Image 1 (cartoon, rainbow, N blue to C red):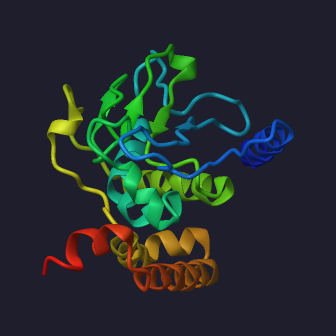
Image 2 (image 1 turned 180 degrees about the vertical axis):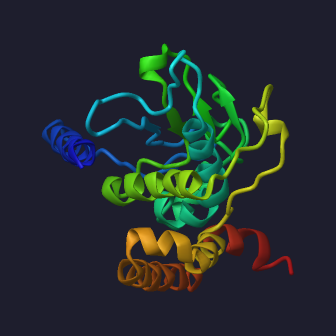
Length: 231
């Protein structure tokens, strides 16, 4: 919660500073075409509340079952949580191949093309980076949803795919590409709802579905330019 507070205040601070210099700051996920978007990568560690020990680290400094199961949970459940990590129609424009945003949920060590990255570090700093969230997300909801996915992996003992080596952009996308698809997955994710709260998930889905349907009523300039006199 403290980290989410800091993200929230940081965004407000940047907006205020921009206004004082007669300009505007935006945290849209993809404000400029053909340029990388704006992300909010989340680094997860898993500490024992009593001892402070990193539970991703074994007695000899190796990686624990919890470490791999957390990654497995992200791989399995993040597609259903994308509606929270990418909460607006513009959010999905960020997931573009070779533009510094992931297109799938492969995981790798210090691999910035994968959706899930394990940064190089010593055992005490071992963590898992979720690279899916955009800077347009609500930090409280986004962090909670990402943690819930990893927690479900530990509870259900979900094991991840084999570590990916190479360019993950060469692979196929395995995340929702539009908001409507993401909402469909979110609405079916009963395990995720149980952790985040069924009442919250129901209301969130209703609000976001209404936003998406409103967006679909808008005819874009691209459609008029390419279709109006050509079909």
